[in-house]
Length: 378
Image (cartoon, rainbow, N blue to C red; front, side):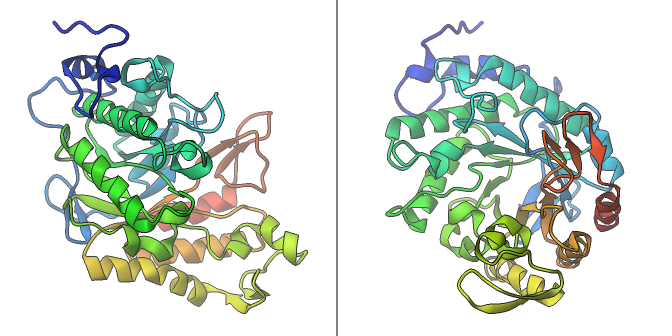
């Protein structure tokens, strides 16, 4: 039996994780006792394939607000036609309630945070959903200019060790679709896309020491800017999926930014003037044009693309028409996606989310629910 006590493997130099990490990482949600490896998707060119070799189109929800998921959400997602859920672990994150980093704990994770993560993964996989597990690490991704993964080698090493712990913890958990290594990187200049790509390549090598099967998700600079996908393309691994956000156009999806400049929200469909004073139009054709960089990138490099966050605040005019058009385009082009987001606590009906809780219980946006159900139908 391996004995693990405080101050052992995670304090040692280098990225290799010693035997006690494997012992501590065991017992994760849904860990299989059988010798057969846990089921995984595979990457084949621009497609994702199920374990029996059939193409799969992933569509589903984010359980993006840490602690908001409920035990029934896996079944609720599947009943709406979803087959994937994107679940975060908030590590080196803004706000102590959401951040489950603990430097001096096994794997650098708070035990109670790991327990909650185990539960959420089990709720999803028990319902037959695939899980994209992502690192939400805003401080390390660029929020903290003084201490992030590009200027603090010790913090970078700790983050890499945390990922090594995670992939060992869930190596026997079925239906892990992918590990998304760092959500929405946004290192400030002078860090370049090439340096971001180098960070990913180093982290990929670290993960592959412990898991050679599970697909990995990476994405471009400036919070997963869809126009910068090519900047992080790499050939160091053949099991990569590329992520991009889609909250476009910004002037429509984030009306408060528009109102700061123009004083009124953008109508859908309709003409508007952007923040730079350029006359534009937002309609289905404009949305198709905004998605085109992802389609071009997919075709050029023959890699899968996952629109990991798509949505809009419900206060945007004619938001149901907008969402119907966006989701229709994603379906028509078989772009994998996850809607942002399933539940939002301490929120009203005009914000993001399908379910919201203003403080007196969960409420469903029934009309948005109809649009999502229609879009997620096979």
